[in-house]
Image 1: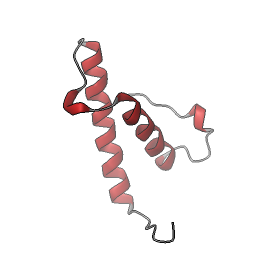
Image 2: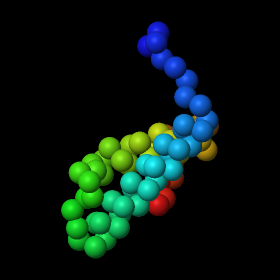
Image 3: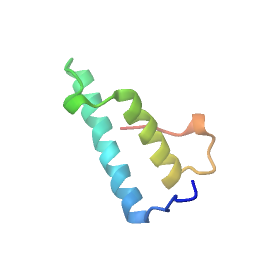
Image 4: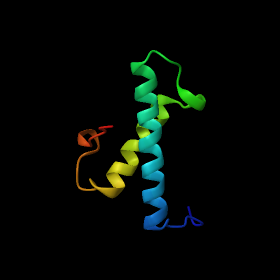
Length: 70
């Protein structure tokens, strides 16, 4: 932890956008009865989506109340 480095706002927003797109691809695949694209893991994608939403918008919101809309 002593070597942890804070990420820039730009990096955080870029990763939030990427995970949103991954989640959308997963939702779309599920809706169409297809396998997850590119070996994406839906559970991992959901957790990352929640983390980024919390960092960007909801830091004062309870973890279980964070919206994961796609």
